[in-house]
Image (cartoon, rainbow, N blue to C red; front, side, top):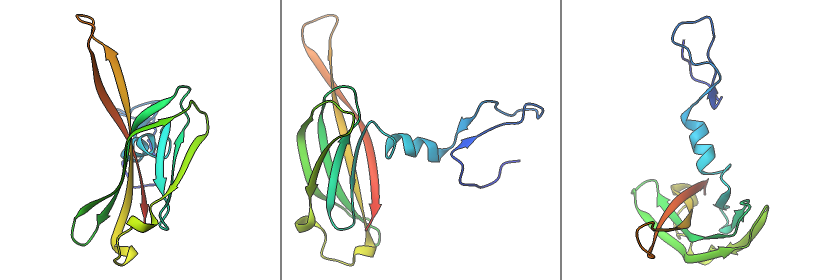
Length: 144
């Protein structure tokens, strides 16, 4: 029967009716894919030192947004935004920066820093020469 645990993949028993064999992702596994295990990851330490890492086999062009979320008030405070971040192809290409001056002046245990790296995707339209853009997002969170 289902129980709580720290595993991110659920494995079924082939002899039990209704079980999924081969492993089904739990919500934790989806979180990993979108943050710590993403090809492009952005994160910040509680001190305000941040970095973006590109592990893609291609250049990264996209948006970078760092926000503080006040856990007591529910407020979201934008701290840093780079609308056209460009990084060469990876693996392991990193860009370091600091947001120490932008950190909230309140008790650090009352907010969480969230970093978003959204990749720009440009696709040629098959019916015309115009292009459209969309984005995908990865997030990382660090408790301050």
